Length: 341
Image 1 (spheres, rainbow, N blue to C red):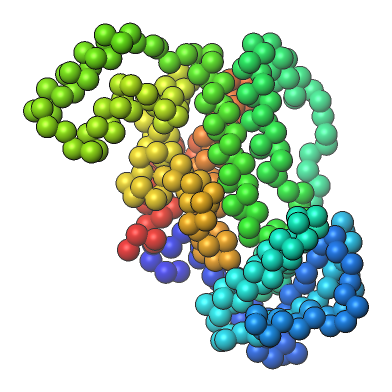
Image 2: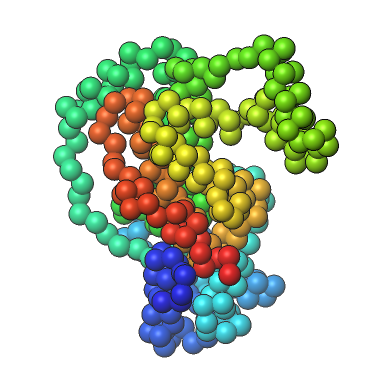
């Protein structure tokens, strides 16, 4: 394993390299894949020279695609049979699917899958569906004030909507969608916590006094960063400040500072959970890159922990332990060391 590479990144690379080593002979130098969705089969073979893609007309059957109206086989020319070549081909397939969704005005669901790029395993059935473990949590939720309960209901919506069924296709782009879903849940939980424990308000004269003291501490000369810091610490703490306040009301000082750092103040700013969410939402990550997907998935483990534990504090249910927190592994070192040189 490459030094500093996360477990998921290393696993993804190993899986892809294993696929390359056992490349189906009938594929030649092409990558074969399946396109599935709500569309009808084409009347003739589709050839797209600009992307090097061919889509065949014969419908396919596969245990993964139980709900898809149509499944078709496709092939794409590889510049080289390497991990880099497969990533480049994945980007072109994503272009094809994205443009199809665009020209259809979003009316048809569509996706793709390949045994080389999409790890897939089947799991046994989960535990029996039982209402008894839920009753106390449901009663706890219903007992909350209405404005708080609405925030919690939205947080619940975001987490259950982000989870796939075990037999559904594990597309790498769903890692990004799940991440944004859990971040949305965190924002709802912070709002709920702030309604239960409002951020103390200070008067205009107190704000002015704090600004005067800040200016005095800086020797009467402020940088642009100083002005922003003063504004966020005195005038309007924003979501970041509200999140710190919310965490402090439910966790120990040690956990509060750890979670706050992971969310907003990571050693490398691009590695903070908040900045990862922003990079996903603003198109600064590559959804076709399996290593980027692995990086986000590793970060999602920390985001999940914070969300579940905050749920546990508000609804009083048995939330999972923070195993990484117990071992004291810094977020930057545990997840992102390989991405920062």
